[in-house]
Image (cartoon, rainbow, N blue to C red):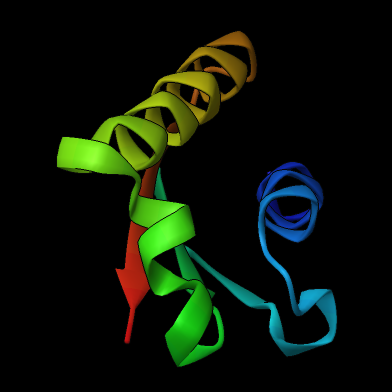
Length: 76
């Protein structure tokens, strides 16, 4: 899951070296924290949150296949 979000984020931003992804695993749920450069935050969120929502949808579909729940948090 972590690698999936990292690949998507690096493809979207201007500064791929500043992309940081941390995964916090629990029993049933994984929390994936995404941190990007301040100037790239708008590209990750997208207009009206569409890009962020699409990333969450992809993550949800991939985690369902593994029978786990994953939550994406975008940190500033």
